[in-house]
Length: 367
Image 1 (cartoon, rainbow, N blue to C red):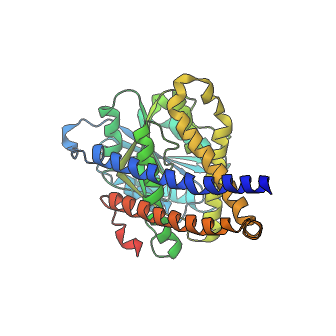
Image 2: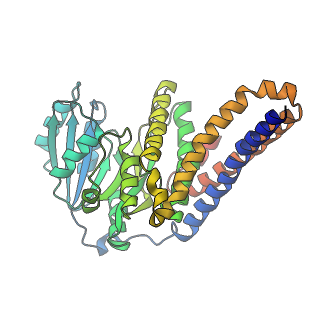
Image 3: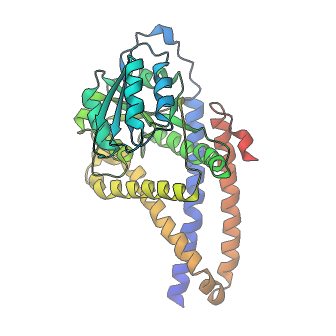
């Protein structure tokens, strides 16, 4: 009974205090980023001699969206650009559509791979083919905001040679179903806050694979993307930062993306994200052996604690009936702590949505 009580106390406290403290942490970081970094003066695009940029677009079975994405890129006001689309062994009409577009759009270069080898391999091929030093990678179903390339590339001028990557601000564009509307608020209240806070700390868990700019020299320094990792964006983020390349977050670089609209689609997406995060933790545990890597320790520990919290919450939920029968006082604590966490989540959501509304009108999706 004593051991059960001690275990219940520890688990209950961890399940409550970890999200409570991290919610305060994310809110404070997001507010600091907004006040000191997000309220900068607008860039006058005409004041710069913009370098050439290569847009890399890996494609796999994207016949419904690829033409729209390529045409939007071709109409970008950015002065010097090329578009490199890599067909990753698609089994639909993607290749035929790209062949047709290559004949019509002079900036488009099309590479047709007959075998499906994954997104990381497509990015490898596109990177080797790119003529520019600066690369902007976007998904084949995404629409890039016309000003996004300027905001992304400006960081490489402003912040010096140590900047290896700049991650943009993904926004949800399919907003009709309940699940997609929930993800609009999620991207503002959770992902946006985390990106802002991690940037204040100086290290980020991951760039956004849907829209990110790279310095080619930095990618070459870390051996490009890992082909053996399920999430190439998380993996390359850690490789860059372990080699002391800086990663910046630019909330003004908007990219409109499609999100899953079914429970099955969301489940597959989140399983992939979770596996990618765990693979990174396993591969990069040696960061604790190098004092120079200390700035990324907190990102590693936060990710590890998130995994431990998930299993702790599951265990507490499964054994709640046992606890409520043998230790009645825990039932009241469980109910009270749940209410406090819901309230704190709402405060975080409200704070983040207010901040993010500067770039996207997401307030109306709170109702």
